[in-house]
Amino acid sequence: MDPGPGGGRVVDMENSSRPTVDPILDPSFGATTTTQPRRRFELRRSRTDRMLGGVCGGLAEALGADPALVRLGLVALTVLGAGSGGLLYIAAWILVPEADA
Image (cartoon, rainbow, N blue to C red; front, side, top):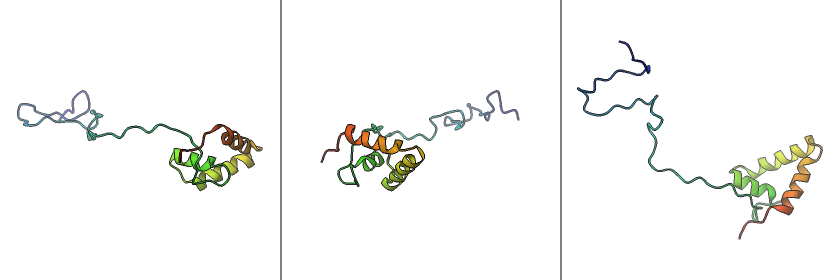
């Protein structure tokens, strides 16, 4: 049987009691009706998860990551980037506002 021009299956609509949806061709197939609103990326220095200024804790909170991994990444950037990670940390400490209590 020839699948037709779209490569999908051929359905006899006269003998079908329900409309058919091709999950390959229909992007809304299986989509839920409720969607969560997109959270805005807002960088704030953490008041609770801090070692120095709370920059890594706030960045981890904004990204949804583990603060220890963010700190390790900053150390790696500082060592491999000839101190650029330290400069970025100091700049963020000065420029990024602290989170509300």
